[in-house]
Image 1 (cartoon, rainbow, N blue to C red):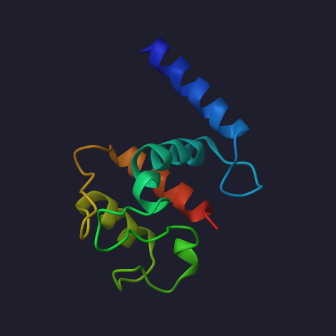
Image 2 (image 1 turned 90 degrees about the vertical axis):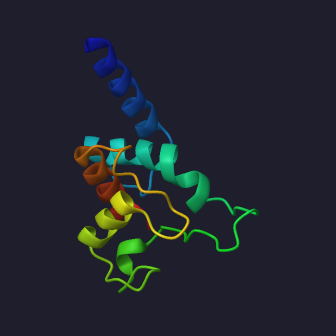
Length: 113
């Protein structure tokens, strides 16, 4: 367990030294969210996927919009629901992420401008 904590601390330190979502300092939860985003989301949401008919939306500024690409209100609860249940070609993450992970991911998504 200590080894896992050390690994997480090292990852968080590494992420904090790389480009962040904004110039302000990220909290530990936001850093964890950044790592989760880069591990699970960025591949599709940051890079065009030539094999998909419909491209996943860019998530920068997600909470600055009135609605999500699905048309649902741009609220933390709606984003959380999308992460857990999936939508369209996006897989559900209910069995892949813990509730704490989803909260960290949503906190990080708030920072993406």
